[in-house]
Each structure stands twice: as C-alpha cells, then as structure tokens.
Image (cartoon, rainbow, N blue to C red):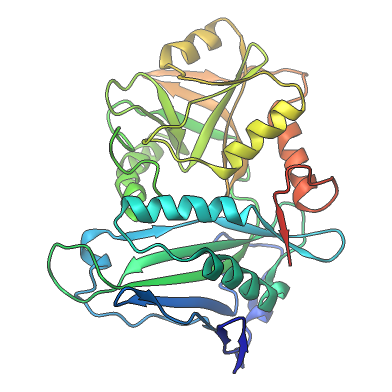
Length: 354
C-alpha cells in the first residue's frame, strides 16, 4: 500500500481491462479496476481508501435499503488531444452532490475528499478512459446510509463511493417520446432537484408503460396541472421554436443539469437566443401545427444530447419537420466535444485535467 495526500491506495493485482470490448461499450457493462470508499461515523469522515473494485458487505437492516437515503452523481472523463485526461466540471458536480445530500438529510462529503479522491482514482485507472468518438469514462460518485438499525430515522453513518465504467453513445438513434400527463416525476416541494434513488425508481413504471406503447422515453409534465414540460426521461428538455432555444426554468422539481447549463452558455456564446421559461403542451402542439418547431432534444451527462424525432401528445403523433437548416443541437454538441477533448479553448474553465 501507499499513501497519497491522506488517501490510502491498494492497487489491484488482477486487472480486468482485457475483457473490455472497446468497439461495443454497452453502458455500465464494464467496471474499472478500482473504486474509492470513505466512511462517515460518529460525526467524522474517516480516511478514504482506493481499493480494487469489489462487492459491498452490508447488514440487512442497513437504513439505505429501507428508507431511501441514497444519492449519486453522474460525471465523465475524456481523453484529450495532448494525452491528458479531462474530468469535466467536477466542482459543479460536487455542488449538486452537496445539495442532494442536504435534501436527504445526509452527511456532506468534504470537497477535498470528493475532488482529490476523484483525481487519484482516475489517474490510477486512466487506461480505462476510452478515446473513440462519442466515448468517455462515466464516473458514478454515490453515497448510502449504512447505519444498521431497523427504524425510521436519519442515519448516523454513511459510505461514500466512486466507481467508473467506460461508455459509448447512450442513444444510438433519434427518440420517440410521449408527453406524460397522468404520472409525474416530481412535485414542487419534493426531491425533484436532488439526484436521489427514489426519483428514478418512481419513474420506472410510467416509462415502462410508455415503452409498451412504442415510445423510447417520456416528457414529464408539472405535478400540479400537467400542463408544462419539465424533463425528458433522465435528461433536461430543450426545444427550438422560431429559431430560439427554449428550455424549462430550474425549480425544486427539475434537476439542475450540468450539460443543460453548458449548452445554455455555449448557445449564448454563439449568439443564439435562449429562453429559460415555462413550455406548455399547447405551445408544443401549436408549434407543430404552425411548423415553427424545428428541433427537440434532451441533454444530460450520460446522453450528452439526444435528438427527439417524434412526440406523442394525447392520442396524436407529431413528427419533427425535415429541414436543411443546420441543427442547433449538433452545433452545441460539437462545441462541447471540442472543449472537453482540448480541440478548442476552455474559455469557461470547465476542464479539470489529470
């Protein structure tokens, strides 16, 4: 073992990297060789360890298994043109992780453990960062309540872990989505802005029902009146109407997406008119009827940007019009790619290279 900035590192003696099919990086199929683990107990965070990837041993009465105190982040690391590795916007991800922890009454991991641990882990597993177009190392920091006590209470013990997996493009083709007006993802005053496990578990049923109807995903609407678009599946939603980039405003029922923020800032750099405002179902329907909508897409860490070709509204199916105009989504996705991989100047200082 060796010590690196108070992080104890135990290197694996058996790498599994030779098992990876780099031409078919199914999302989440392969786990990199190491993971970071740090425990919290008696009011203090203990010394973080980087250890070989392995299973966890938990009591059946572990609180996370019963009452939902579990949060996570989704990040990516990219191979750059100069051979360095870029962890994209880790401080912004840390800030969101803190907000999630606060909402779920969980202990807050110190920034130095989060950032330094992330850096050391990626340095150790740098060979796992793919370099093919559209690929990246997906990084999953997460935290669970580990106190073993079968009672409805806020846990006094936690485990913070970071794992990673090499991935390719999340969606391979344009999406067919349904505007969901019966089920909701989140309500005002709820946990919609936090990346907690319950948000995703609750979304499975309506998403599965939509897939049975032939759709890939759903467009969630507000929990009060089901009139306004909120998110698209696991992504933030964006529309191009009358040459303006429109996206629902942030609230406590919408996730503050890092890719969303990046796209907005890059769009403004390009002189594109951006509107962060409510988008009603009627506005989307009218835009199709008037041929003023030219694009719809979702943005998120896993998917980056995924085009929406078909939108189901009630019992009607609307197809995105065919146009020869350059797509705003493609422009912004390309700009983001160039910054992440070092092809363009990092004017917003988003990159964290190791």
